[in-house]
Image (cartoon, rainbow, N blue to C red; front, top):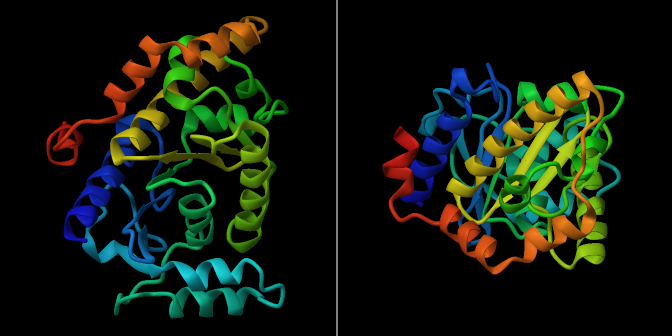
Length: 261
């Protein structure tokens, strides 16, 4: 667990870097599945930019997922679940987004999850367009890093209700595409990256930032020129792109080297 904790802290600090404008103050949260029925998640109110061990909670997966089907829970009930779900004696509550992270780690098949309020992505998600501009692709690397399709969720109060909607959307997405998305876009809220490694989480969020900035530029001068669906499918399935995708994601020792740069 110690290695996963260190890697989660380093990832969180990278997402929280002020120059990247992905999250400020207590915005955003990260998580990692420990594979033993528990997962690590950022504690409520802590800042990603200077996160340390005291700002990470280890949480039991089962009671968090069970809460999704309990329609009797009110705000005080949600707090009780968060308190009782802690797998150790952490003095801090897990983030209210712990429910969404549990869904992404179970239904979404992710090992690592990162959620932030990226300024660039929010500029689009908070507009009248919502997530729609991200439903088509405008350049190849977004397909390679962020996946052929992204999932979109309309604005819902963060916490338990949002997690329930994310679960519904993930199930529909898997039924339609045969796999979970790498990206969930929460309208008026921010992006969520579902990944196999902490490196992939950061790659996805950085590529989303570039994608959003390009979209904002194209929307300012006219209309984005979307790639034809057949072209996007071809890029997604090309063997050389698949190889490049694998090289981008992996990297032994990443957390202790690249994350520090």
